[in-house]
Image 1 (tube, helix red, strand yellow):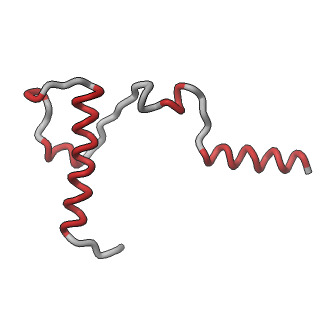
Image 2: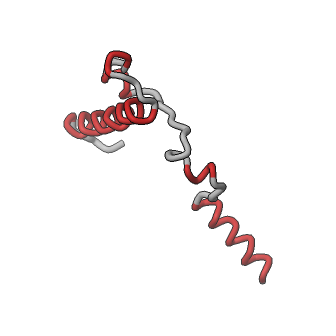
Image 3: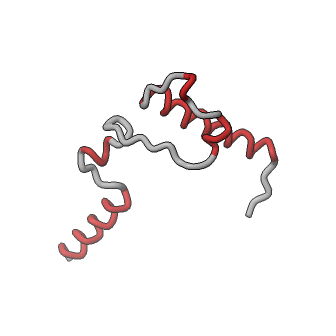
Length: 79
């Protein structure tokens, strides 16, 4: 495990909190008085399953790892 400073940990904790805060405010449209305490957002997940955030899933676009597997299978069949 890498030795990381406290400032590194604080920076990434704040980055994740801001990301989840934006999802709660902009996607779920929660008002300020109903939002949880900011520190509680550093752990756990805030899921957003809207069509904007999960574009690939709704339009059946395969992930890169599946594309690679598919191409490998196609090459085996062609050979």
